[in-house]
Image (tube, rainbow, N blue to C red):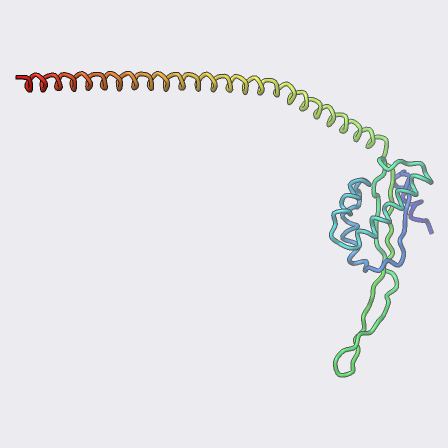
Length: 214
C-alpha cells in the first residue's frame, strides 16, 4: 500500500510534510467545515482563518497546523513563507458510549465522538514563488508611489490653507475698518446734533431774557 506522502510527491512533485492529531474530542462532522476553509490556503492565511473562527475545534486544528509547519522547517528545511495547506481531512475515531438517566427509571445512550485530524503542508513551486515575489514587489512600488503623491500633495494643501487664512485675515481687517469708520461717522453726527440743540436752547433763553427785561 502506497503511503499518502508518497502518492502526493509522485502526483504533484512537491515536498510535503504531515501532522496528525489522534483521538480529538470532537466529531469529524464538526471539524470538516473548518478544514474546508483552510484547504489550499497559505500557512499565514490559514492561521488568520483559524484565529478568527468561532468554532472550538479551530484551536485543535491550529495546533496541528503549527506542528506540520515545525516538522517542515526542522526536518526538511522549508521556511514557513513557502508552505501552503495542500491537504487536510478528518477521520472518525472510536466513539465513547455513555448513559444518561431519564424519567421512570429509564436511561438513554450518549455517544461522545472522536476523530483523527491530519494536516499536510507542501512547498510552492518555483513558478508560484516567483509570481508571489513579483506581486509583492508591485505592491511595494504602488505603496511608494502613493506615499510620494501624498507627500507632494501635502505642501500644496498647506499653501492653500495659508493663502485662505491670509485672505480671511485681510477680510477681517477690512470689516473692522468699515465698522470703525461707521462708528466715527455716527459719533460726529451725534455731536453735531447735540451742538445744534445747544445753540437752539441758547437762542430761546436769550429771547426769554429780552422779553423779561422789556
